[in-house]
Length: 317
Image 1 (cartoon, rainbow, N blue to C red):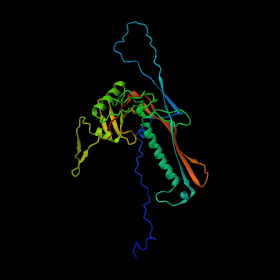
Image 2 (image 1 turned 90 degrees about the horizontal axis):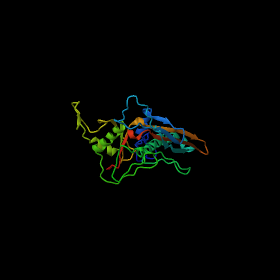
Image 3 (image 1 turned 180 degrees about the vertical axis):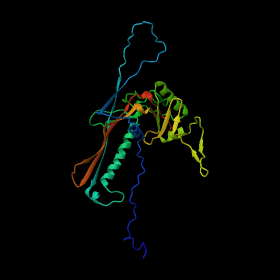
Image 4 (image 1 turned 90 degrees about the vertical axis):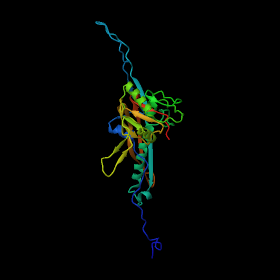
């Protein structure tokens, strides 16, 4: 007798696990939360204030004994963004909830865990999307204005592209010029501009193709080879920190942003703002099933876009 003769009595050989490779990292959210750069929104329209100093002058000296010279005070500007909602529900039949499964101990909890990861990465994509803020009526979904929309001062883009107004009300105009590959000159130009405005950027979020381009920047060090081991050499072909005259940046690869954008931020001038933090709500039974809903409502704050920079309309292949 062989296994082929008794194929109907042999036990199945199925691994008791389920593999998922889809990326679930959320670099911007994780970095802001780890640094305590999170606020709490108390309304669906989230607002904050920005202000400026008078222009620098080398020629506004005063006479000895002169009376005080009063000038009009600047009024702080009020900026807003909209809290958008992400919601995903799961329903599991009573039979499926009772059945033994490979790799799943509790089917409802497994579905909830997937939806939590999906919502997190969807919010990450929204934060880097070229979306204007939307808050019109009950029949239209609300949208936050993404980071690219806010950046208007320290930017580099194609000749037929254009910045937005910077207030989140409109999106960027994407350029269509082909062959705009990221160069170190583009990079240094926007960093210099950010420094001139008073910025001190500390992180660059890079889609995969643009990260590869940065890895080819010559800088001062042309190439490095680790020869510490007598049996194994390692060629290092990746830049983790970019040290410039005007900024030291952590380079963070980002899977969920647009491949045509490179975003450089001073993290402490940006906030992740939770209106309703991620929550799981178990819904009432209405039949032979179990139901749950994962929901989150949040937005971002751009406290001063002059602190940060962006290079746009880049070739991505």
